Image 1 (cartoon, rainbow over the protein chains, first blue to last red):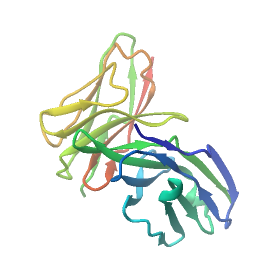
Image 2: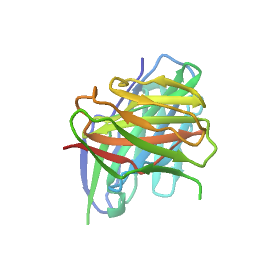
Image 3: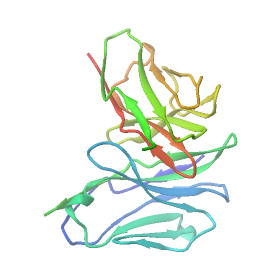
Image 4: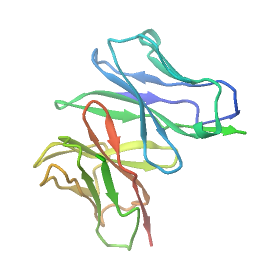
Length: 116
Length: 109
């Protein structure tokens, strides 16, 4: 069984604030993948990052950064100097093998609202 | 440009009616997926297909059916057995990551 928990249902910040979205996962597999997706109001999910279970190196991409810690089963996402365009629902997902295919299971999402 | 096309964008179902949601991809991906999204529920897996002429039930397959006769197409039928069909439906295909369509909002008349 696998489970992804995004405990923050909604976060509201003012533009230029830093914000961290939490993701905690459960799996018994040693090989798995973690993802973050962004869903703007248009509805289509946009891929942000993929990380495999053997790569704990943190990653930074512009204002986005990700902190993967296997010891705490967490894969947190930080937006630095948030902007109004960052307003969206963000999903964390865990993918482990099921019948020969890696099937992502998604958390319930965190709605981020950035006020001007 | 390559991508996933879902149609229609909005769909209305009458009680007792079956409706079919279209999903087409030109990314040459073998694997395709259908997810259902309800407010506050995240995405839940309905069906997935790893290859043509093969598909597997996901976590909430009851009341739904699919077919995979062509690599490019993975239509989802919401049958009359699905008593609570109102939701946002997302189709995806995969290589190393999932690529999503823009979704279909299904409502009940």
